[in-house]
Length: 339
Ligand SMILES: Cc1cc2nc3c(=O)[nH]c(=O)nc-3n(C[C@H](O)[C@H](O)[C@H](O)COP(=O)(O)OP(=O)(O)OC[C@H]3O[C@@H](n4cnc5c(N)ncnc54)[C@H](O)[C@@H]3O)c2cc1C
Figure 1 (tube, helix red, strand yellow):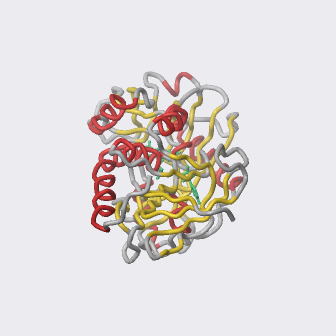
Figure 2: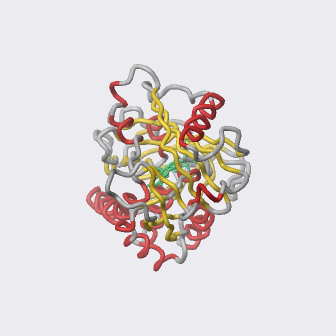
Figure 3: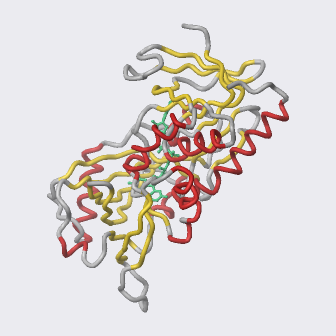
């Protein structure tokens, strides 16, 4: 293997959390390295919805970086408590396809060193900092197809559901669920969309299921039936499956798809035989609903940023405090910053 590349901070994972954190660090004058295995995570398949009350930090990010995909939608809710009207309500959405399309350009312009590849194993401790072994993609611009060794003073694990495999000793409350959606090849029937652009359950059951994760003996799943436009596609979902073993294998896509189609059909959102591709991804969450943000206990210089319950609301306000904490920890360690 070639001589290790030297870095101040390496962020592992370039989805919503890692991508925006890398931009924030760059804005504070310390552009990190960003290692990302590609748009295979939860962000790429996300609805990207957030309450209107949470759009302030996104407006600030857009003022700084230009359009990131933020838009207003009208949502129709089903399963409303008695007494609540049926008028559609405004919600905000960050279109994941737009966000993931503009992020690489913004990161490059901000001086972030992007490495397209996969961190293969937990970081190894050095006298000062950490060593990471990365397999670079054949398409990587810097070291196409070659293994790369990175040495960093600080490493931030922002790799979503992969964080656990990158540091198995993370707290037990960090778990993984599997989310499944249908990407419809045609827009859903107009009667389902009218008079709104988004159809959602008033009450998502996903969070209740996630809170019970530690008590499960068998995989448990629910369908929170909804329809959400994103980019040029319509997503019909969402099936959530929580396995009892967070490190277990991926669930069988065929039976996941059958459960999702059945749930959508029962609700009347999408016929069971609707044309569309089934897609599923693992999603990190914390059983107490509070994300894991900050230094990893007993591993100086190793940080974690994952386990969100509403990532599009939670991530933006956490960026500045986390980037500031990283900078002050580096200053206290007294090590000269590497570029
Ligand atoms: C169908 C669906 C609907 C959703 N709807 C909403 C919603 O409306 N609102 C909301 O707030 N949240 C929603 N979520 C959840 C939200 O999308 C996720 O919580 C969020 O996107 C997680 O972002 P992340 O950056 O932490 O992880 P991810 O997006 O999973 O990103 C992790 C990144 O790490 C990279 N990676 C993984 N392993 C490695 C490795 N070994 N080396 C290098 N890189 C690696 C991956 O390539 C990926 O790019 C939804 C999720 C799904 C699936």
